[in-house]
Image (cartoon, rainbow, N blue to C red; front, side, top):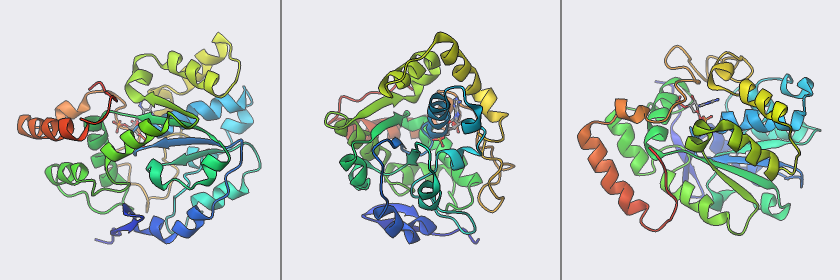
Length: 287
Ligand code: A3P
């Protein structure tokens, strides 16, 4: 197979091509009005990106129609052959920028803290994340082969997948929220009451919203609306990057799909490991 191997930067596993671009990530210049969206992969990044882009557009559809989600909200560390890198896209934007990153908090370039950028972190329960990530590894063929589900689950627990340990990621950003300007949001809360969470984002960004505006954003960013929107569903990326016939990017968008993947034994093993890893935090999730 021609799938590229994982490499390491600052001790974190990352896609090989991303590692090649790492110097540009380190050299990146944040601007004070940049809004950072940080997540562990598969936690609702695209959903929140779409919400924030709608909020900034203030009804101006020129902004939200500007292009695909990865053009409107570039992915800082992104680098694959034959496509502009994330830093290239970001450096060309002359409007207020929304920056997507999957970096663990300890590796995030310092410039974002120096500039005191507002940051929205979205976390999703580990079991649904690993299921979503498994299917994403299968379809996003810039990743190494995921192996069997069993193997992938093991690698995920050991932090041997791109962007490392989910446990380290969600806890690191959770702890950072005390000192930094971070809005910490749970994917499960967005599913439960999307409008409540959209209100939170408006408030965090210091914007006044009308009920009508929130309703419009809620409609435009529903799972079905985004799945049907070629500017939000990643169908415009080259086939050399993603193969939607293997598994669509907008796959299910629910809580609890892990029950269709974990065996009873895998679930018991995972729960035991989870309890140990999460013993030192008051951060909790619904499954
Ligand atoms: P599933 O694979 O479980 O369906 P990310 O954007 O961080 O890569 O996360 C992708 C996950 O978020 C996928 O989960 C995807 O379906 C889900 N998702 C994307 N948009 C969504 C929306 N509007 N509502 C609910 N889930 C959404």
